[in-house]
Image 1 (cartoon, one colour):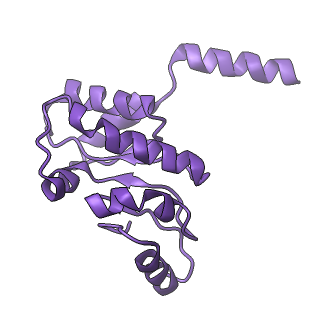
Image 2: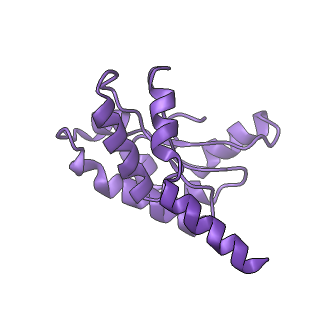
Length: 151
């Protein structure tokens, strides 16, 4: 993971030092937001990561509990992910460590944006995020029917 990703040049330098290891740039500044297309098109970028806490600090945004103010950032990351043909993006952390409902809501929001993962700030959050990211019984049933039709 490369924090405060803001340019292709910086990511290329990091990639060279990592000898081609896939990188996950964290978009957490206005400059990173402005360079999203460039960042997504950089060699060895596997997927983008939203760093909304530092993004708020950098831009002066003050988000409400539902973080509606960060929708433009998440949407831009989703679009850059698609245009860059990257693996699904990773959403930022939920800082309310003991608020399981909030974590579930935040993870579902990430899924609605097409993200494939979510950062955790505490180990207790990992099983909850895994459960929220897992397909529902209906989704599994649908997938099985699709596979059965192809056989």
